[in-house]
Length: 260
Ligand code: SAM
Image (cartoon, rainbow, N blue to C red):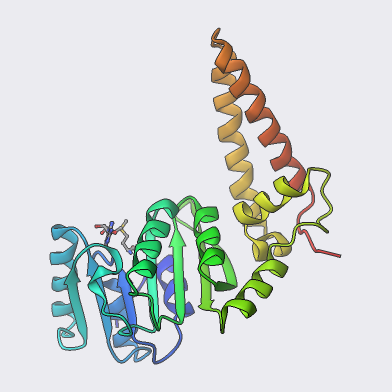
């Protein structure tokens, strides 16, 4: 059986057994091959926009002897799916902005109708994905943070809410920042829940701290560059970065952040 990287294995582990899974932006179709070969999913769809990765996905499915069980389709995002065709959609290894655009276009076209489960691994911009989930009544079930080859990844697992009211109630509780033990204003506190992840903040894993300390280091370097500039806009940007860094430090000091 195909051996997945730690990141892809963590994603595959989140997919519910027997789901009709669609991996969008599948590249070599490693995930669909694993899901079918392992017996976890009876069949899978691999979607790809670009011709090179589309051909690589076709080759991956063929080499695994799974052309019958893995349907490789070329197209933009969720447009490769018919409404009701998939139970689980996987999007991995792309930015959160592209990911939420793909999800939103799919939601508007009805391609997400009947999709119960989303397994999402944005490389950056996780907050955009969390906001999209809330906007479209998906409820986050878990967040996993892991490291591979010096890179830190977050994997979000969400289910479609049973109905709008239930999803809104869940999400309101999940992102309720009013009780967090932070000095900053409620709006900023909420922002940090979206940026760092509501479950990840509660768990306060060392990897989460490492990720955000690295982010702090990046901002510090940008601020040092700005300090060399004589432009007046640079002073404003420097001040804004300073505020952001101060908030980041405050959140890091409070981890794990359990609501009272
Ligand atoms: N999902 C695999 C993984 O996590 O290892 C591959 C990630 S690869 C970095 C991103 C893939 O998404 C590329 O193969 C790219 O062609 C594909 N892609 C980018 N935009 C897309 C879109 N709008 N619809 C479908 N695929 C897309």
